[in-house]
Every structure is written in structure tokens, then in C-alpha cells.
Amino acid sequence: MAYSYDDQNIFAKILRGESPNQTVEETEHTLAFADIYPQAPVHVLVIPKGPYVCFDHFAAEASDAEIADFHRVAAKICADLNVSPGGGGDGYRTISNAGEAGVQEVPHYHMHILGGRPLGRMLQPAS
Ligand code: 5GP
Image (tube, rainbow, N blue to C red):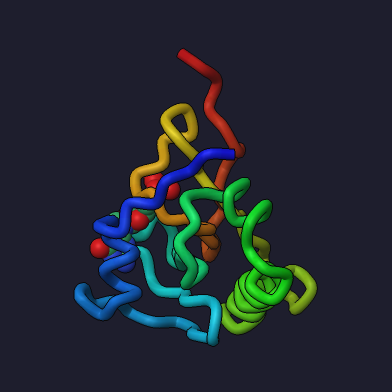
């Protein structure tokens, strides 16, 4: 696997405190904050603090502690924001775009958590 991480991306700047964010949750390994252009009433981005480009980079190279923490934070947000079906919420969707075909805009791994309205089908048919 050959990923090179661009530390000038906007999420790297947020992690360094050079750009503001609306923090939802923060731990030793993970930061979660509101998406600046929300696509749903709940739209939170969960990012690892480490320099990982996308999902498969993170899953292959992050430590077990980073991976566990990331997912625990994501689950806590689903519960705290009342979208978890297990807690009586209506449900949510997690999305992680990677690379060109995945239309990833920011090259720092992130998971979108979307909810608070019916989200429609996962993908539109190709046109
Ligand atoms: P991607 O297309 O890479 O999966 O999603 C990147 C997301 O980052 C988009 O939903 C976009 O609205 C969000 N975003 C881009 N720049 C900023 C920023 O400066 N602050 C925050 N909070 N979100 C951002």
C-alpha cells in the first residue's frame, strides 16, 4: 500500500488548531465535528488524529487502539444525537468516500454520520 499524506489538507489544519471547527467529541485518537455544509439535520464528520488518507489506509495501518477509539466515538455520537435505532432513533447512514471514483474531497480519512431525516436510497443509478 502506498499512500502519501498531504498535511496541508483542511482536516489536518483543523487538527493543528489552524482552522476552527464545531467539535462534537474529542478523545486521544479521534475528533468529531459538524460538517460545514450539512446534508442532513445530523451531519458529523469523525476523523482519526493520525495521518491516514482514507478508510483502507486507516484500517491497514492504524493501531488497534486508534481503530477501536474511532468506532467507539462514532457509536457514541449516534447514541448522543438520538439517531441510533438501538436507542429508539430513526436511523442514520455512515459514508466514507475514497479517491477519485469515491469523490473524496478531503484527503484525510473521515466518516460521515448522517441522520435526522429520511436519507433515500444509498446510490442513484449511474446516468
Ligand atoms: P468528502 O467528499 O471528502 O467525503 O467530504 C468532505 C466533507 O468535508 C464535505 O462534506 C465538506 O462539507 C466538509 N468540509 C470541507 N471543508 C470543511 C471545513 O473547513 N470544515 C468542516 N467542518 N467541514 C468541511
